[in-house]
Length: 323
Image (cartoon, rainbow, N blue to C red; front, side, top):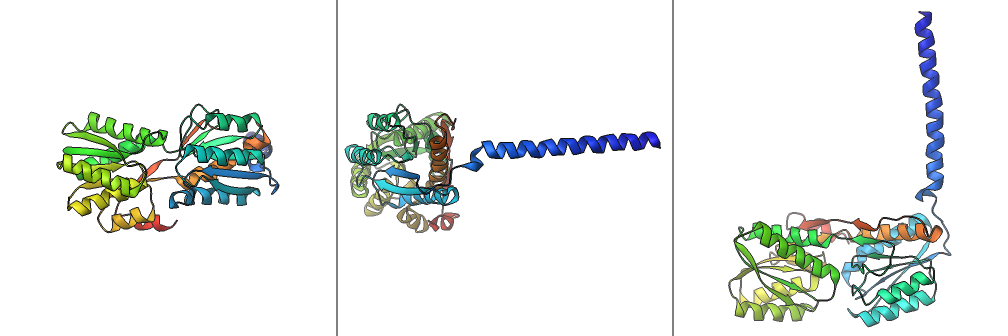
């Protein structure tokens, strides 16, 4: 009996010592980790995009603002008015001149923004990229969709809608890395997984609804047997739907992103599905990374963060009207 009592006493004492040091280690981790990020409103962080004001950026900006409220810092949103690299360079240079605590950038061009981003880094301003990457810019991290996987998801969905056979086409825009990767992912999946399908054409919709519509009308007149389309961005998706309607063509359409017009067309049965990105998470985590880098320039943020995609159809479309 005494022997058992001694054993229990030793075990209880050991557990008590373990629990005490466990609590100490937890407190130490909290003090050294991201939980103690700065809470100064004097720190201004800026998000810079292109084509400012479109619905697509709203979740990303909301995530940036939500993170600012949580962390106790100030944020601002700036964007070039058009899809124009020179306009975005000008906006970015203006932001750099004000010496913010950090900048989150969605790059309209995968290479031509590099010198301006490096200018920010040389001035000691942390930069992270989100949504659209510039891999050789030197930015600390890229947060966004794995765009090849997104293109692959679109291909699988379109194949299911087309009973795994028939000709497809991609409507995209050149020069932007994320759109190129979506196209590559789509083509690769069709070629590798669906032997009775093909990608008959890749056309430039110029990120414009009416220009995409005309490109699709011209294409369907040349190749009327094309039965499915994938748009790598939102404007072309609505253009495809308009072209099909004007020609009275029954084609399957996969769009991209969750603009209200796209969601409305899904509800109306004129677009079959769209690929939704985790844009709020892009903005939210971008600010966390920037604050960490501002406090400690040597802080090791992840080089890439995949914010994933979901396929939106008429079954789940209502959930995406929240933004």
